[in-house]
Image (cartoon, rainbow, N blue to C red):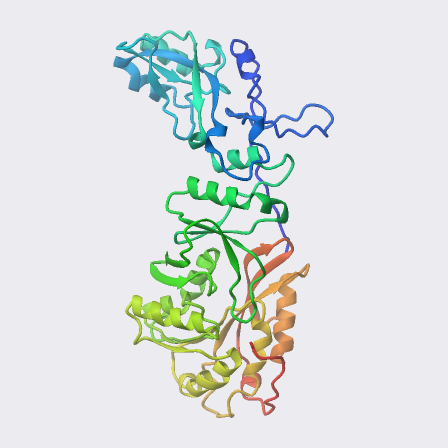
Length: 458
C-alpha cells in the first residue's frame, strides 16, 4: 500500500497595483519568512503582522497582540449599502470578529465605509468589471479611502497567535482531538515551554472547550489509557460525547477513546444485522457493542480495564440497552475461551451471523491463537463459522501483507487469499492501523491441539 503524505499549499496572488502599495508593504509578508533561502520567498499574504515583542511569550498577554493596520475602504450611501456589500463580497475584508461595514468619518452621516481586502484591492482598477459596473449603477464612487483598523487578540486565528509566539522555523501545533468539552493535544518537545499558552489559546478560540490536556506518555498496552496533564481550564475529565447517534460518558483520563475511529465503528456495525451475535473482546466503553445492540444484535462485550468495564455498563444503561448487552471484565483470551466458547456451539447451528470484534491494535493479532481448538468437533457445527474483525498496527512497507502474515502465524493457518484487509487510518508517520477480516477456519476452530501461544493481556 502506498503511503501518501499530503500537504495543501495555498496560492498567493501577486499584487502589481499601485495606490496602497506603500501602505501594504509593511504587512503583506509574514515575519516567519526564512532568511536561509536564496531569493525572495513569498508567503501567504496576511493582514496582521504581530508585534515582535510577543515572540517567545510563555504566559499569554492578550493586550500585547493589539495592532493597527491600514486597509482600503469605500464610502457608500446607506440606501444602497446592502446591494454594494453583496456585489463586492469577493473584495470585502474577511477577518474574524471584524465588521466589514463601519461608520463614516462624520457623525450622523448618511454614508458608511465598506472595508476592503488589501490583498485584492489596492486601487480603483483592482475591481473586476462586474464590480465596477455595480458601483456605477449604484452611484458609488470607486475612490478609495484609508481606514485605520485596530486588530486585537480576539481577531486572530489560533495559528496566527501561535505563529507569532513560537520561535521562527518551528512547527506550530493547533490541531487537537475533541472529546466532549476536552481538547486533547500531542505536543512535541520543542512546544512544551509554551504548553500552557497553547492550551489557553486553544480554549479561547474554540467555543465549548473548557479543558485542554496533553498526553505525557504512550498508551498503556494493558488498559489502553494514558497519563495526561491539564494545560488550561477545568480539571474535569468526565466527558460526554455523541457518536453515530449514540451517547457515551466516561472518564477520559482512565479509559481509551479515539474520536477519529467514528467512521470505523460505523463501518463494522453496518455489517451487523438484527439477530446476529456480536462478541466484542476489547469493548472499551462500548463504541462497537452499543450500536450493534441498538440494531437488534445479541451482544457480549468485554474489557479488562475495570474503569472501561464500569463505563461500558453505565453507557448501556444510558442508552437503555442494559438488558441487550452482557458485560464482562476479563482478559481477552479468558473471554474467548469462556463466554464466547460457551455461546458458540448453539450459534453455529443457527442462521444468523456471528461477529467477533478485536479492537486492541497493539496486541489483538497475538490473541488469535485463542481460537485454536476452541470447540470440540461436531458435524453439525460448521455451517455458520464466526467472522473475526481483528485490528493491528503495522510499520511495514506493505502493511496489508504484514498484518495478514502475523494473523496467520498467530492463528496457525494461512490466511492469504482467505481474508480481506481494510486500511483504517494512519496513526503516525510509517505506522498504519489495519483491520483483518476473515472467517475462522473450521480446521482451526476444531483442531485437536489446544496449545496456547503468546501471552495474556495482563
